[in-house]
Length: 77
Image (cartoon, rainbow, N blue to C red; front, side, top):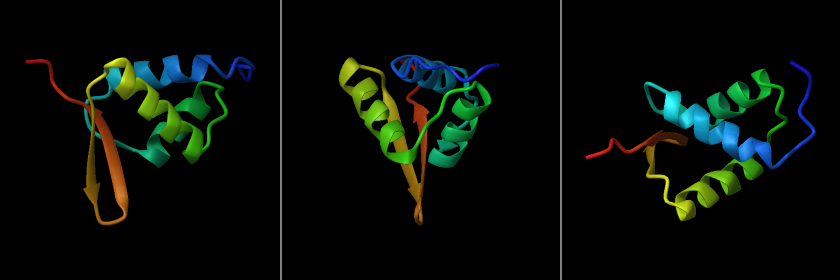
């Protein structure tokens, strides 16, 4: 897939990745999955996008294990 030039689509792809994940994903894994879709991503921009998705209302949870944080969607109740 060609590199997508529309940076605003990145947040939508990130939302899709989180919704389809069957486990918590590290920042590195999120960036790798975005890159595989042709979306250029960096740690800071993905972090900002995760914050924006939380403000939007997506129930994103973060678990820490040492220095590594993993992100996942809180299950619907």
